[in-house]
Length: 555
Image 1 (tube, rainbow, N blue to C red):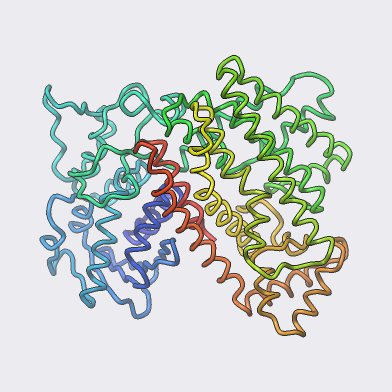
Image 2 (tube, one colour; image 1 turned 60 degrees about the vertical axis):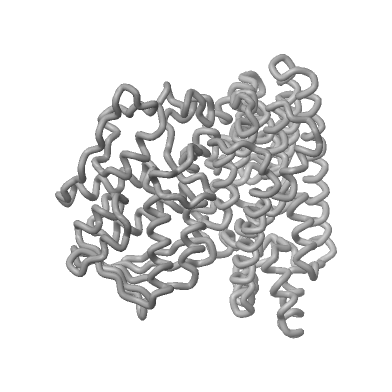
């Protein structure tokens, strides 16, 4: 849908950035703090912008009592991405006016400077603004001059020009060589065919002083990695009998829509260390086979009804076939790891086997802890108990192991270097799981992919469940205990709604969101300290974006 007003343009820009460049959104949210911004545009549209934890929230209505108000006309909208002059030179009553207390106004300038400097290189943002300009007849700025013969940075083809100097500068400052940056893209030029000019995630320099570090559109990168690994999985799966009872069922879950987090972590880590990205594809496929095999078995144990918006495998085909399919996927995953021997050699393949065995052990131990809580009708009293269970059950195979296996694919087998990923992605993994648990309660079912409130019906011991039991009065706690003791088949929607109402009343949802945000921030801090040995390159910047991705997902 094309944007019709300047306010819709701002809202669409924030939405694109939230999906594609979460590190930039988190940094902008940090600059804004608790300030509410009211924006008024020359086309008489209005918008409100505020930060919530690490998110930016934008709507197209005039906010009540904003701390800062900004007026843009079309000329100011054009200069927003020009960046040729200091912001103070652009503040004129007829074109751009700002009102508010000095500290809040300065915070807003820093926010917009960050967004314009660091987000303007994102292709999706350029497309949004170019379409808006062209659709509203806003004149373009001075065209970017072509580099002379001695210029070490060759230009992109003319169709890629936007007509805005800052956008074109960021787009032209990187050489294009057959689909990669300096001949080397996140996937060697095979999956992403264009470089994307983005902030490196840490520095805050003017656009003309940006260092050579580059980044990629996170959403497109994850989709590309997911697509490549899915191709590898389908190539590995046998095309023989019994199809209907086994091999077609093994293709079911992998073909359903997923985020592509594990493939991206595996491939990006391999590339960040200096390995060939293609060497990590088969290891990533093995992790995905393990993941989908675990999901089949988890759905049976949890008596789940839906997986990625479709009926679970055991519901559609029966428990017997589903169990057998999950077993077969785990066996094929081991065979996939072993198939790296001809290309990666003995040492790296043995290293991958060691990582896989450790990952599987952690996963089944975490599953046992959670199932034990449910069987014994026990709700742990500490968040740390959840952290331990979540790290074992999902953290290792979702975040930690993909990074470690990607490093092994690049030739790293030293435990000291492999362990450097552990705490960073333990924190990120726990934050990711908490956010997933929150989405099960408050997210849209079509986007989340599971039945809403399914975790409450299944009796999952989430952070929210732990918090509500910890904060409830004795009478409420007794009522909650009676509900969780019921078998899954006897729990009703009314039971789930009662637990959810108690969570809202006692602040358990907000508590979990804030906790996930705090853990993710700790993970980001550990990323910079623990992984400082990694060179600043595009794959490392992707890992940095993923660390911020956790808490910028929409709720």
